[in-house]
Amino acid sequence: MARVCEVCGKGHQIGNLVSHANNKSKRSFKPNLQTVRALIGKTVKRILACTNCIKAGKVIKAG
Image 1 (cartoon, rainbow, N blue to C red):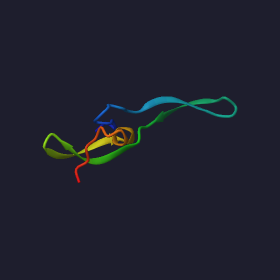
Image 2: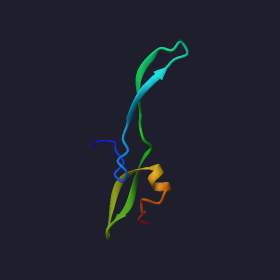
Image 3: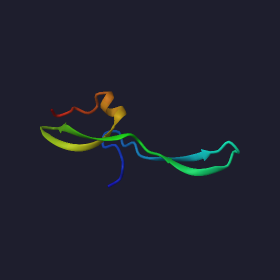
Image 4: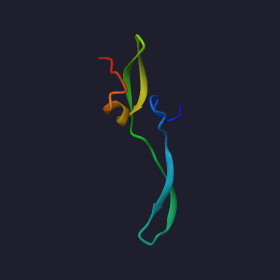
């Protein structure tokens, strides 16, 4: 399973780790994904959602 937000589709990005001597090596930036029990239609499902979507109210939590 890919580590991708199921709401907005945010996934990992690749960039450079830059040292003080300006040496560059590849690194990846991963989204802050949380498992959430969300209300999808009329059913409750566990989804992976990024914290930005949870804070913005795009995910309706099932409680």
